[in-house]
Image (cartoon, rainbow, N blue to C red):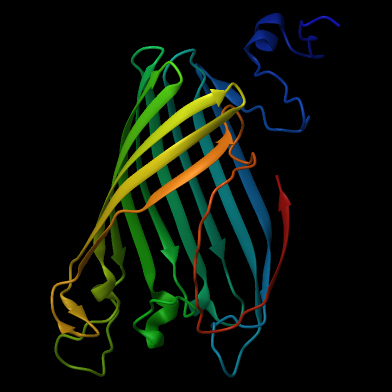
Length: 287
């Protein structure tokens, strides 16, 4: 079988040469629109959200339905070295009976990679997003205005990676700012701390050491430092400064040259709680 790509009908020789290689598994994977040395990937998902508890309450639940639109656009460079990408997406739901629960989420980010040498790479990312919490949030502090509570996140990431034969070291630093919308009760006087007491800045430093035992398998050890600084000095124990720090470590083995969905061997634990029950059904069409 010849390794040359068959020319597509209706494409010129230059346009065919500029097209990305076809996907081996999914023949319908988006190939994007070429804009100079960049590829543009527009996407939109249109559907409906049907829920039996639109207000996320434990008692006296209310049903509602509303159209949902999720636009997304991504612009990636198609360079032999270095990379630069931009992405923006949003999620908007308009409920018919309870517009106070309408969803207005968005995210914008820019990321890049600088290939200093074949073994050394610098990377960076900046991002801003808004997520509507809702009354089911485990950390909500103002139930009366929960539907209007929003979390605005801004973060900047910088990293450096270097490969020494089979050993690869990657150092990553993240500075993130989490700002919850300030809600107030007009029936109360004075300074009343609502959602604002959760605002904080987080600094994370991570060092990952990866060793390639075989071309298809590698193991890594990762250590990180996490520090949080809360803006408001109020907590359940009284008016004292709040801050936290932790130093988690993990050991894992995974395929060295596989995708993020490839199998991994490791250990983790998590715990979560909720204050309400909610069932949802979604119908969507991608265009």
